[in-house]
Image 1 (cartoon, rainbow, N blue to C red):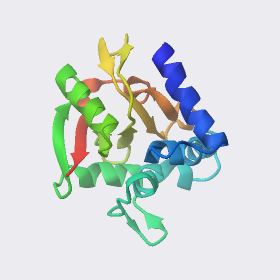
Image 2 (image 1 turned 180 degrees about the vertical axis):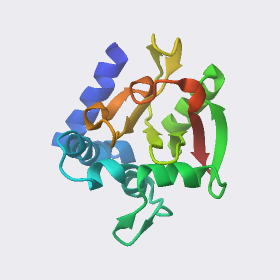
Image 3 (image 1 turned 90 degrees about the vertical axis):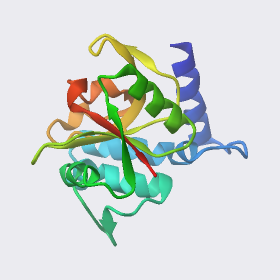
Length: 179
């Protein structure tokens, strides 16, 4: 818990003041990410909820494969595209502790990592955030932090919360890393 408080405190400090030269893309974009999550939770239109992941991947990592100019795929469309190959490689299911640990380590190392639950019209995608794993009673394993929106339940959108807050069934979630 102390690590989490320190990490969140550092991010909040970087938002309000000049950050040290070694700041990460996550530090530089913390305020933008939080604003997008809040906009989704407050029902500020479909854009913050439905196309959060493509816009966030572009903002954080310059990955623009899910956007054409201002138009971006919706989250369920991204979930469907990820499994087709391309720039993303599957790490495995979230029900495997080794996969969760690998995803967390890769994200902490600066790589883009996402969690995907594909479904025809209700697909869900979250971006794994850097930092240590946290115990999840719901999943009975240690899970990484994530940021993501829920178009079906906007109030359940999260910033820097355990991956298990977004997804209820780890066996239906696949983690992917950007090649």
